Image (cartoon, rainbow, N blue to C red; front, side, top):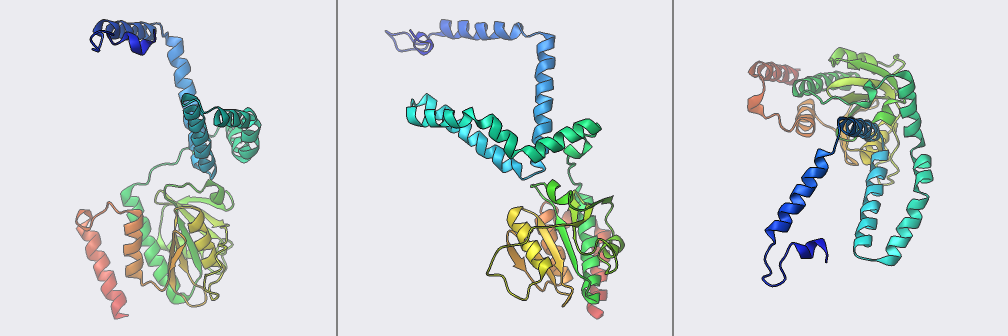
Length: 305
């Protein structure tokens, strides 16, 4: 008789509470056999899994991991439903899965081993952005873009969101600096060695500059768009990032989100859009009144100009 059947009396069809209590105490006794060494073992394994997940979250391999998890779930479901053909096919695929994982995740595994050899795990953890720092970064970006728009200085700024851009950041020069309009303008100054690449913002701080972005393959884009705009659209297609572009030819400010490009934006519109995308929880009433007054005075000053 199965365990499920023993929980119910055959004559009354009711739950057999004695069997339930016996099963509960049996499971409880098994937990009592766990020693201190077993707890340490579990914590070490959990810590390793946490580090690996943080590493994969910083790359595009996260989607591949989700796909593998889905396949494993389908295999378990097929086994439970006795779907012989599907179970056999998935088992054959997973039999060579170890070698496939090594090939697919070779760059990530290599970077993990390099971090272990250097003893530097700080890059595997991505800090959460402080709302005040994010808002300060937005204000500095809007001010810098307004000035660069007037001087027709080309710029390409990437705001990282949930999907991490570790691979993109590794192509540029690490900065890790607090945001300021002066620093952003110096990075994109025409004679600066970093002005041709993209600047990446992570958690409200300037993370890297001079980064290389993938170009969009969308054939429907306007032909008057340059490399910066196509790179912005391409980056927004491959990740959930928000990108700000300042045209070097016209000085127009544009924003790329989800493969869509919004062009010819005013500084006030840019600020509202960035606040809506990067800090939607920051309502107008929760902001510092002094900051609002200064921003309004600055808008009036720009309008007079």
